Picture 1 (tube, chains in turn red, green):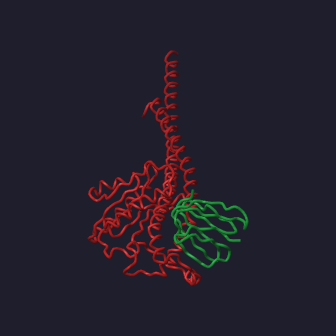
Picture 2 (cartoon, chains in turn orange, yellow; picture 1 turned 180 degrees about the vertical axis):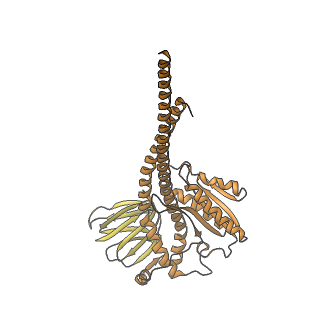
Picture 3 (cartoon, helix red, strand yellow; picture 1 turned 90 degrees about the vertical axis):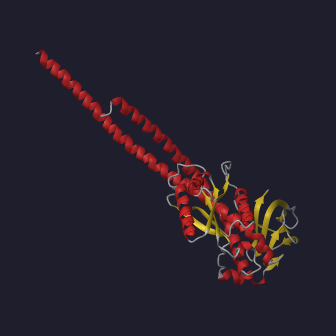
Length: 293
Length: 83
């Protein structure tokens, strides 16, 4: 059995760990609320843009002359996986889930004989280097970003679009954690290039029969396509930020609870050891007194 | 009154009823009043002029990377950033 002193030290160290995890949980909860607000605030823009894109696309249709971002390069040989992760760890399985989803997709694609490249956004995605050391196309530096702005997403989108124009890849997928609730985040991947357009709803097409287009449908679509990619990346980053905080909150809550359980167990052990010591002492005194009689 | 909304990816900047908005369209400026025909237009970087009343001085908002849509519900301007 461990000595009383050692147990006391151990309890002390678990207690201070518990304090840290508790504080981290609080911070994550506060950040989560802010991240959720940001995600909600970005919704109107995305919804309107999507509606406009859908009605435009149904008008223009995909043909030979369509922009490449919409029609694709005509090949599906080279895939780019954009993996958005967080900058910091201690967020439960958040980052490993995203990385695992990306790896699974990469393995599937490679099994089908495709070439896979990675575009890393976020420090924790760098573990992919270990699995695919030669296939990292770019590692986007995000550590300086304090509050995510649209320009940050724009930077990534512009870079990706330039690589697409240069013919570096044919299809791009974006991996991030979809935010469902503070408790549930789901690592998902979806195709962003070529743009998968949402089907126009019947009401949208019916009402814009007499819409004036300035300059014309094709140029508006060509103007909006790159913007659509930026907005999709932006939304993914926002959801990622919310998911990260949610995941960290859950992880830290568990850690705090585990530390509590551990303290309870150690205290019982400590008290038992203390009582055993007292009992031994008493027995010694009594037997000493008995011997003197 | 014309219902006017200015939206950026980060937030809904404006949502209000105004008299008229002059939009710097890529093919030239155009003013939107209540009951304007449905329209979609790209916007060059420039200033939106918002007239709250018929006679009043306009309020200007500089926007970058914009797109305007007029529908029966009003005018919606999507902009990448607003200053």
